[in-house]
Length: 503
Ligand code: BG6
Image (spheres, rainbow, N blue to C red):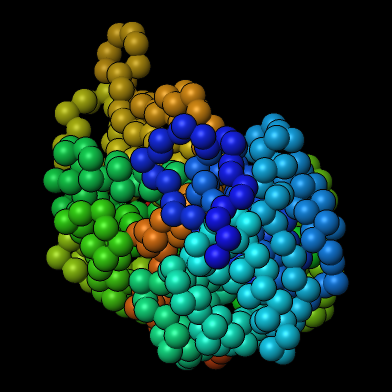
């Protein structure tokens, strides 16, 4: 092998605690939206911060005919449009020197050869040392061919890792099949299944909050917590992804992955350390302890026409590519239980939907009421329970609702908030989830990725819910775009004498 001839000038003399080893990344699905909107802007953000390996290159692989020059130009535009940093030509030029493009559908050996050639070229010109990070941003039907091809032609030197995007299967059976295929060629420690919510700073902060502060642990259980509410609300619609969304709906798109992961992080036991296996062992126990709620504890909805932030928008069935009588749900809410000593009988109410009034992802831990209000002038209705609210996005932060005395005569109590806002406490901007995840995969750290058993537990819960749904046809659409979902979702909590947190 030729000695390395190109060096990254930005890295000269810099020491980092988390610098990955030299490697070449191969992005399958290089002409897709994810590559443009997330993967490349993230790679560029890592380059700006000098977090990439000193010897690095990327091979983009997709079906479209494109030259490397055209690919480089397209990725440059993507970085300029979607990146979070001011564009720097010097950083880009250095990165672009290590980009290659291969146009193939990968079904024939010729395509494989070209990819291997491009990788060998990177090894010799950029010093990537045979280490490979394969990123599968491709639809599930293309998965098998690619996994087998990579598996068969693993580099004999260096490590091989595989990053797999969602959707990981369509149900338990297909997810198991994918896991089996992967296990034929790769060790579990080489597979990095993405749930990009785990890459969000504020989601990781949930762990920091729980396990670096002694005050929460003693009250983080059924004795003190009345219930938990998790909301993943989006104001956007399906953004031209009808083909995908018609098949997935809210339960497969958000509930199966992001929602259940948020719940697992909220409910899990303290891990003994922050290694991939310790954290995932605790999460999988939560997922395994959840039972399928009866049909009356799961609500589904689909948006009709309405107004979102003052603009009139179409109903789901009017979106391009959606069947005029589609029964796909764009909203799901459920009451779930975690059957263990910490949480028995404590409801976890969860909801996720498209075209809701606002974008908001929150985890609200609602504590039990104070046992006896001694203030005669304050009605017990005014004494609201404490709520610890974790704002995942936007307005990232944490806030604790407490009762406080209104200034003046007498003893009137009102609820006020003690707030921690990321923007105020830390001056640096928050990194995008993909930056963290791509870097972790390069470092071989799987803590923030989903293990095969977690995925399978998630699917078995979804399968059970979907099986109940097959029995009836709700009257869709049942909520107007720009509202907070169907009325039956409010009833879900009202029946228990509770209500969704006010916005
Ligand atoms: C994706 C879903 O996984 O998450 C999308 O497929 C959804 O439908 C997106 O819009 C939400 O991600 P974020 O980071 O914007 O909350």
